[in-house]
Image 1 (cartoon, one colour):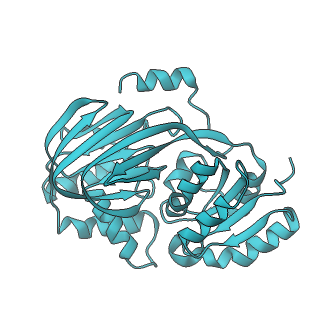
Image 2 (spheres, one colour; image 1 turned 90 degrees about the vertical axis):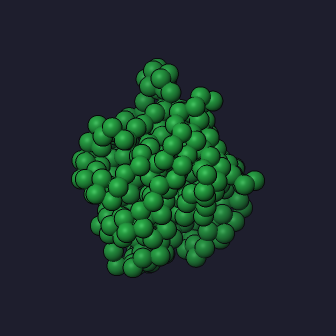
Image 3 (cartoon, rainbow, N blue to C red; image 1 turned 60 degrees about the vertical axis):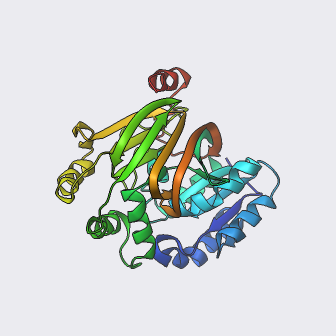
Length: 317
């Protein structure tokens, strides 16, 4: 299949701690040779990228070169204009790309695939709080892991990927706290009491590949809540290696469940982060799944859940 002639390729030079800027000229040369009809735009700010997407006809093919943060900042315009998205994973976390079978893939191969392959629908989530709606693809973190995201954003750019997440996890331990939460899942009371975090996953991993909810899928029509109770610093240190191996769900203070709608109320404001991007504090918020809302190009090995499998998985939500 020939490359989409009207495709817009957006490259975030700030992705991967600024290392993505080195790809601007190689990508430009590749497009001139392999896809001369495609247009490259270097996006210096989220507003610039969003404006470019809203200027396109509905349903246009768009390719984003960047990571979870890049995708997050473009998501509102992508959903609004129903664009078909191709993704070239070039970020610090790349959890969305992992879920789609796109990571790791060399950038030239990923770019060709993003331009030429068919798109498939996946779910997204939306955070509703304080009169604003914030869509997300990979995760919506609340509590300890959101505080880690805030540290990581402000941290040194030379540290990336999972080492960056782990480094800031250890730093956040010094200020470890819990929040008294009231959590309702699909209208039913689920939890009342202290928690270190209560985070929502659409992808199986967060924090640059940590298997937070190994069974989570981006195309099953539901989201997954992951909660951790009132841990001490020593308890978090003991749990962290289990999280890295995907064995943390056997811990009595850790729980997970599937849902379509979620409401969380906190006695004191709790930090939030969407797709690794800090959102500030909130005392009450809701999260809702938007099934099959984003059209995206998945990797060659990605297998859709299928309607029957998705319905069976989410029937226990």
